[in-house]
Length: 208
Image 1 (cartoon, rainbow, N blue to C red):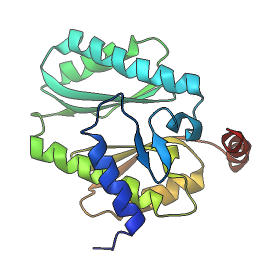
Image 2 (cartoon, rainbow, N blue to C red):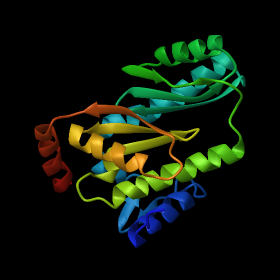
Image 3 (cartoon, helix red, strand yellow):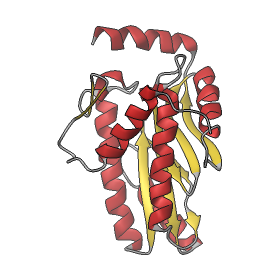
């Protein structure tokens, strides 16, 4: 196993600890506040970030109306692209979940990664949470990609990468994620931007 640097270990612990904090309480890591202040470093507009939060909440409400408790489903929205993960009992419920999300306002596209199987166990979900933290820590450790540009979701050992990134960043992040012990597969659910678009975004972040 490769050695995790002190910086990565600190971030890993902080991410794990954040699960026990109130949703209203900010988390401070390395002098940067995780919470409202992350909106400054996110490559989405502040409006898009708020919209994504609304999409996730509305999607889960629609899904509950559609299939009730017949499954374990999670939704993650990034720039109005919605990733659906988890497990449902049949193909009909898988289709019903996707249709429910499609009815949510402002959804641009859907990536339906639901498994037709029994719900994952608590140890499996805990393992996924740890993998997510390790992948995020591996991004923090490298200098040529920006960790906060990625949203990481893990389900049954499969890591999904979301964000607005360049092809270079996407390839490097995928390579890093694949190198984390326990990761079975990496799926890119990314919006690719050009290096020029990235350069145009950086001064805006610096000014804020």
